Length: 297
Image 1: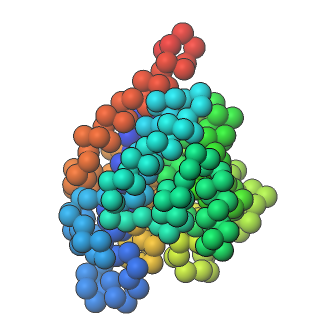
Image 2: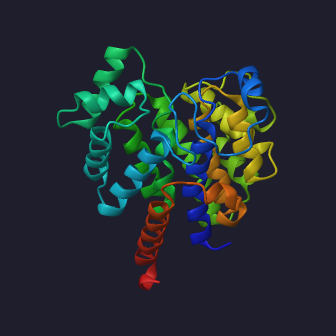
């Protein structure tokens, strides 16, 4: 599979999982069944009153990270941060408490703003940096750069090592498929070896689908390891409820890298309202990759 196909699949995978799961966020499986049966289509609504195909903070902050890296690949932190602040100023419908605190109190030092949020809120191990980290793997052809950007963008808002670890594991999986041609299960196995997530290779999540980063990653790994198609991954995330838009976006990103854009049903990809922006971002990422290759090829 061509790299461009995987990159486009990854970005659209985030958006589709987000848009589908946004309908059922904060609902229980019982509530979802009562209202939707088994949700299979992008219909909007939900707590955020989404338009069909509208995305939430998961996708928009993923694009902030992508745009920041594309603007300044050698040192993207300030470029990413500028885009976070621009997005925050647009008064988005959905924004997590940790990120809201950081963006609302930032005064020139991202890491200090994250530390202050941790002190003020009493915790910062949410899934808000994991949901947006995929562009680090998509943009950089060298793992050292991808890993550094993964952890850096996490520390900008989440002052907790659990978040850094989750972003690193997630992007190791993506990178192994993008640049090493690894199969999904092989990539997951290598990334979780020796970590607290290794048991997910043969275990159920045994936790709620919550916004706690450890719970989120456990659910993401479970969905990826036990599903047979992109469609199945995002539908199961949506119908589990809880933090379904974020779990759907994160799982959908890796599912999109694995199955490629062609593996995403057209009724999903064609429904996304910001499709033109996703396409443009994909083209810019591919161009960055090519410019970094030997001889510019």
